[in-house]
Structures are given as structure tokens and as C-alpha cells.
Image 1 (cartoon, one colour):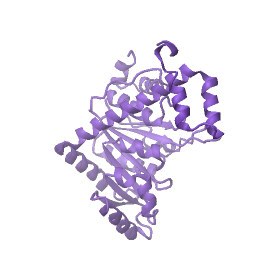
Image 2 (cartoon, one colour):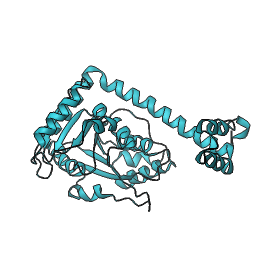
Image 3 (tube, rainbow, N blue to C red):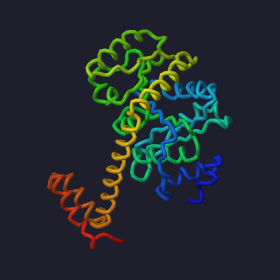
Image 4 (cartoon, rainbow, N blue to C red):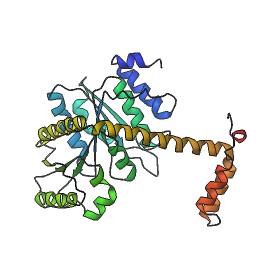
Length: 306
């Protein structure tokens, strides 16, 4: 790939260009050599994730580490527009050569966002960024999947945060390696800590639960220390290697599924595909029967270019 030498040399323009190409599907991401360490930050909208990420960047830089951020922003279901608010909140670091921030909207990625983010991570790793923070917009299934692909996943909650049932449905209990009660200077922080600990007891997991006030930087040094401690623990135990191997297999399966769908669409044709969708919507055909009908077109002779 001709863009890779300047990217590896620190050319930010080339890096941004390559990221755009990979997201559009017009270029392939380089292979993952495992050199970069990925931290996922997720939680409910309004939990203060971007403010916490911004404050964490200061701590990381004070430690002399270089860090890239992938800020996953929401896309309007009506206009297709993306807020891209996280990049605005992180303008404190705009002139810092040791920080690279990239916003990714949830619309328009070839193969879906859950596949676009790992590709973007590989590009940043190939460009020499040793730490990569992936901050997701919320706790929907896609965001949980993305954050769950990080090496260390940080879940951000607020005092008075949700009930145990909704937390379990969101998958946060399963993917969280570190829990942070942000805005911990508000009433209800102690009760939230107790609730989290009670829920985690049901999962036989004991991840740390930390207090933070991201607006003034309280608790961020402790969070960075917890991330480093978690990294050291999973490296020594072999869990990091197991997690990364499992993620690569999951990504393979997702890619095969997406590419099979594209092949089926090409083989069946737009009219047949829309007809199948209409029949399913009208209740005239079950989804399983429609899928069988569309996949029946996937004979080598029916696939353009096959």
C-alpha cells in the first residue's frame, strides 16, 4: 500500500487519508501485529465519557505516552448527519503532536461500524500509535460489541445509574474490566458503588470500581493506573493473547457474513432482493424461507465475477 510509508513516518495527512480509504472500503487495513494496546470507553449517553476521555488524555501525556483516539459519534437516523461532538470536546489536545483524534460516524462504513473500528485500529497501530482509545457513543449492541473488542474495557456510569436488569441486558457487566463512577461528587455515588458490586457478584467477577470527577481531573490518575495494572495482569496470564485471538476469529465470521450478503444481493439482483423483503414485511414469507430463496442464487454461475 503506497500510503503506508508516510503514515508510519508520522504524516498525519496521509494517516487521515488512509483511514478514510479503509472506512470506505477502497483500501485494506494492514495486518495487526499487536503492538498497540486498545482501551475501550463506553457507557450510557450523558455519563461524561468524552469529558473523561479528554481528562485521561492529559494523564497519559503527562506520563510521556503517545495516544490516538477513535471517537465514535452518533448519526441522525433522519438526516444522516453526525454530531461529532467528541472531537470538539477534545480540542485541548488539538496542537499536541502526541495525540491523534479521529471521529467516526455510525453511518456509511462498509461492512458496518463493528468492522470499521478494528480496521481503523490496525491503521493507527501500523502508524506507530502505542495506545489507542476507542470511545463509543452509548450502550447499544453495536457499541457493546466495539468496546468488547478492546484489550481493556472501561465502563462509565453516573450516580443513580440504571437498574440491574437493564445493565445486564446492555452487556456491560460482561465486557467491563474497569468500572468508573463519573460525577462521583454527586449524591448517590455510594449507592451506585454498592449496586455495581452487588451485580458483579452475580457474575463471579471482581473488576475495580473507581470514583472520578472528570471535569476537574479527580480519579483519572487512578484510572490510568488501573488500566496499566489490568494490562500487566492479562499479559502475564495469557488472557490478552486469548482475547485477541478470539476477536480475530469473531471478525473473520463477521466479514464472511457481510461478504456473503453482498454476494447474495449481487446474485439475486435488486428486484428479487426487494421482493423478498416486501414478502417478509407483508407476512407472506418467513424470514428463513426468504433467506433460503435468496441464498439459492449463490451458485458460482450466478455470482457476477465468480
